[in-house]
Image 1 (cartoon, rainbow, N blue to C red):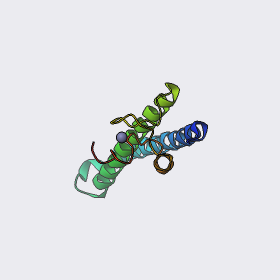
Image 2: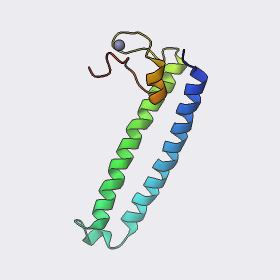
Image 3: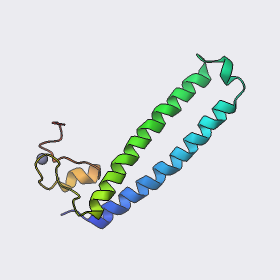
Image 4: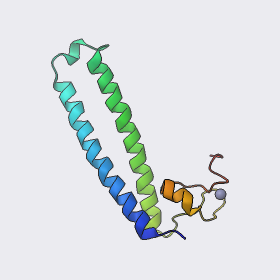
Length: 110
Ligand SMILES: [Zn+2]
């Protein structure tokens, strides 16, 4: 059995953390833009740092989407079912990551 309340709280907590980190990253991006050296150093550290922030930001935005999708399913009472076969996803899997959308059997076929 899965505890939906517990999962929901876990998702909401992670969501909050991600939004916080995303705000930080946006601030960092703005700081880099305002850095006067930035314009002259396309291949330099500033550029690399910017790429790095961009990758992190994309990763976090994707994760945020997964979390929102899982929260939406909780609202619709469709949470915890495999998208492929419709069976309940093993609670052990949901404990590892509450945004999993496939059961163990189908975790590799999508
Ligand atoms: Zn399945």
